[in-house]
Length: 386
Image (cartoon, one colour):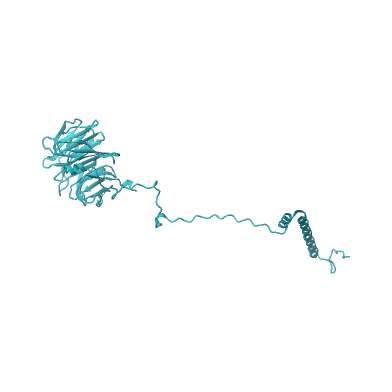
């Protein structure tokens, strides 16, 4: 019979550690017995639950998913083969060089039959233009049908045209006549210069005011009556070659001796030697504060701050158009164009082979139409080139 436990413990008594071990063994046997009963009574599933609760450590929770930071993408410029833009996002690019389209023939019948070339042009927008040729034809361009002959002056070749709107234009010819588009139709040729005969330029800022000039130094003013053009002697020494009127209150005209004349408040001044090298061939004014003239031999004369100054363009410009103060486009006699902005001229860029240009009109900044001696037209719209 086992000895009773002594509260003070002694050499012959059982220690608390041995007693604890016995209690653990008894619990383990009780657990085993319980498991055995469960296996017998309920099958392996109950045993699994008991074992999981008592003997198998709890499964660790899976770690929280790590947030993966996206790697920095390679800049598009560093990619050797950038992805192509989708067609919907692609920006249309004009054909040809430097924002100009390729030459498009528009008046080939006149060129082939009469050797007639486009001599003047006036554009109201990129797709609404009028032009005249040396065979006496007036051509009109619109967006859909393109260019077509809309009037003919049988008396002589037309030299210049100016349109204040799509409903009013005036063209002048080499026999002193004017043809006018008004009230939806073109007039018959009207003799406005019986003395000289050759009108070299015309400018119409409004439907009630035009000025035409001739090669004898005279200016003719239209003030609403197609048959009454008031004559003024402007240049007694040379013939006037071109005129530009940005408004009814201001005009500038140039002559074949390099002189420039300005019109203000109904009268012309005595003129200024603007280009001492050679004669000025064409002038364009965007306002009463800015004009630019070219001489055909690489020189220009600029009107700013109420005075004329001259300089070099770098190419032989034959036609010029200035739709805004400080901004001009000029075309030359060998298929090139130059741009004036920020007070300087660009270098010439070939846009039409070696063809000589004859006419140019810019309805706005970066919106121009030019015509060459082969009756081809080219459109300038660099803003659309992306």
